[in-house]
Structure formats: C-alpha cells, structure tokens
Length: 460
Image (cartoon, rainbow, N blue to C red; front, top):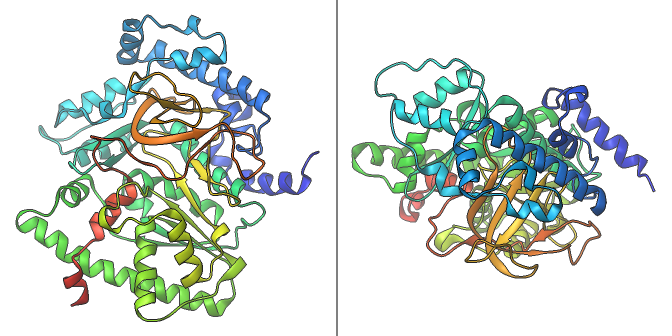
C-alpha cells in the first residue's frame, strides 16, 4: 500500500535537491536507479534486480567505450558489454583494486594520470608551474568544473578520485537520500546541525566536500573544522609529525582540538535550553572526545527524541581508542540523552557513490541495491555466499566519470536481508575491519590524526 506520508516527505526533500537531479528527460538507466526510487532501501527485490542490471550494464558499457585504461583491463579478461545478459553476469565484471587509485606519479605526470583514469572528455585544464603539488593539480581540475576528491591511509599515500560534476552530485544526493530515508519521518529543514567534519568549502577531502549537501536540506549548519584541509596537511598527520613543520602542525592541531570541543559543548548547552531539534553528523572521534570531556566533568544532557546522531568516516582504524559501535551508542545515550535507535552509522568511501546506512531497528548496514551491487570476495576474488567473511567489493552504477567496479581493503560479512527490520535488501554486519595487510584508512581516521595530541599536552 502506498505510504502517502513518506511520498510527501521525500518529495519535499527532492524539491530542495533540484540542482543535484538531472532533467528527467535526460535520465540514463543509472539515473533511473538512483533518483527514481522513493526509498533506496525499500525497492521490491524483483524491481531492484532489473534496475541494478540495467544501470550497471549501462555504466559498464559507458566505461568500456570511453575509458581506454579500463577497456584494456576488460580485454585482458576477455569481457565485453555483450557478455552482460543476466544479473548473474554482473559478478563477472572486471574489478579494480582500490590500491590502483593510490598508484600515481607526481607533478604534471599526476595530472596526466588523473586524465587517463577519467572516463570521457576532459574540459580544458590549465596548470601553472613545472612541478605542481597535488593540491595545485586538484585546484586546476576543479577550477575547470570537475570535483577531484581524496582520502588517505597511514602511509600518507592519498586515494584520488576524479568525478565530473554530475557524478559528484550523484554521490551527494545518494548520501543525503540515504540519511533522510532511514530516519523517516524525523528529517525536517528546521533541524540545527553540527557537521563534525572539515568545512566543505575549504577542503577536497571527500567526507568534508560531500558534506556540502547538508547545507541544502538543513536550516542551520555549523562546521567543526573551519580551517583549510589540504592533501599536504593530511599527509603530515597520517604519517606522523616530522621536523619543524610537523611539530607546528601538531601544536596548532592540539590547540584547535580543545577549542573545537569546547565550542561543540557550548552549542549543546544553548540547544538544551532552546528546545529545538539538533543533529550531529560526521567523524565519530570528535563526538567521542566531547563525550569523554563531559564524563570527566560529571555532566550530561537529555535531548531525547528531538535529536539524532549520524557517524561517518569509519570505525575500522581507531587503534587503542577504538570502541565497539554498540558501546558508542550507549555512551551517546547516557551522556547526551539521545536514544540509541537515533544513533546511526554510515559506511562510505571516496571510491564509492553509494553509501550503506544503519537501520534504527537493528543497526545493520543497508545497501542502496537498485544501483549499487555489494559483493564479498574470497581469496580467489570470487563472490562468497551470504554469511561468509571476505573482502568487500562493489559495482557502482552512479560512477560515470571513473570505473566504479572496485575491490576494497575492508573485511566484511553480508547477509541476504536484515535479521531485525523489514527492509528487503542485503546488509553488512556493522562491525567492519581492515583486511590483513591493508593499511589504516578512512576520512574519520584522517580527522582523528589531524586533531590528535597526546594526553599529557591536552591535560596541560
């Protein structure tokens, strides 16, 4: 039976998202699978399988015909668009390891590398100087109308993904729609949000840049990290401060971290009195630090049903400070008074335009399966059965400016459907970790290291 309340709810959302949605007359099968469903997590399975087949086949054909690097890979595997006839054939699509997007040269050769992995025709790009830095190359590409973003690992070696504006809008739309759909009927433009990430206008870090979408669907948004966050800053923080420049970064990171935590607490104090709805979204490390400080001071809040928390950027690499997600939700409820069911985590990555989202009923990670096919691979890179642990991979039809058929370094378990809620699609076990031998990564880990200081300095 049609849910008229939800239809009105999501139509209001789409009305605010007009700039992100292509003209319906120009929709491709990939667009139909992303923008068409009212709820990405409740598409009837047969309908979703047809959408998934059409959209991924369209995307694969697009890359095969317009990306020489990817076409060479496919020809090496003897696979072409004509080989995709059924949903079972999708699992045969040649995939690219995520390490491929870290294997780049420097200077002007880096710009050529970005151009070679980009699918389609590049706009005219003007790069100044003979030896441009990665930030200067990114700036030149983005000035030409693209949206190159990055993430990193403990080695300081960045992952770069070249998106055109249409693909980046698709990623932002998919993130916002996943949130709005999963928290129905609680989203409203009147919410006050604290974005626990870098300012989207001052970084090309993917988790920060993609957060710009919340400014279009939330009435009032505050940003936790107001300074510029460049690839060089992230490189120094992920590899550890070295030399005078590194020590300066660490010193100011410590001062800014303490000031940021204090500002968030003042914001919480204000909204406890205002009785308005609040929403905290972003790197879970930041909220953990807020909770830690409040607990030390013997303080707590009671926001209740007029609030919720969304965490993003990954829990898979918190070293000694890592806590289980269930414990984090319990701390949020105990200290902030926000019910555990309103504390939801998102699983996303710079290489992907589809994000997986906790359901409030069971906190399993639901996939947007109409345009995004999640896979779990064994040691032979063949798909495993439901319930088995293996390496996460995905086929992402929304990736039209780079081949979004990618094998990640994450270790996951997938179930055919959620064991708790009634949503029909596949889910991941919420506890995700890095596969053996894979370096630490994740935008939240980058934020953690950027802000971290040792406890002695913080106590001082």
